[in-house]
Amino acid sequence: MVVNLQKGQRIDLTKGNAGLSRLQVGLGWDPVEQKKSGGLFGGGGGASVDCDASVIMLQNDRLVNQEDVVYFGRKASIDGSVKHSGDNLTGEGAGDDETIFIDLNAVPTQYNKLVFVVNIYEAKKRNQDFGMIQNAYIRVLNPANNEELLRYNLTDNYGGQTALITGEIYRNGNEWKFGAIGTGTTDDGLSGVINRYR
Image (tube, rainbow, N blue to C red; front, side):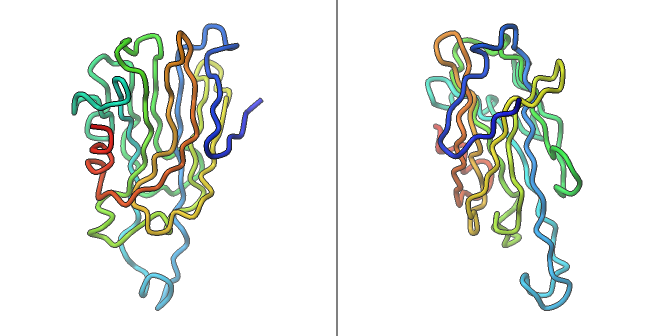
């Protein structure tokens, strides 16, 4: 049975799930319907909102290497434990928009945390923010049987925000946990979010 999390909640992933080592993390969002003429966004017809999902792999809660960021431009971590499905340019359609695959047993021991971020590509240049996005979520599945283990719907008002730190998977002794973060930022692109962890 899927567990629906609220902001700030934490849950065990591997404890009580014997043998669970591979995870599928789905991130999804939908563009808000734009009015066709003279409406909410100054006449419509503007560029679609392109959201990008990324994973920041941390050592002692810090980003040590630029190569420890997995995103559409670097689809796998150096060790191969984290892999990205590739870029979805529109967010339209049902289901996950971008997917991250993780082999927990293959994550080198120096990494203690994986942070999941969604940012709007060229947000400031295009004058876009997460007020133009709805139904954002992060969910974790067991790819062996496609069972959804948990879901966190990001329901806060993120108007004016250009990036979302959605959640994190982190070590707790020999186990792994998930934390629902849901923090919005005004960083200009992924590099701005990354700098928070240096």
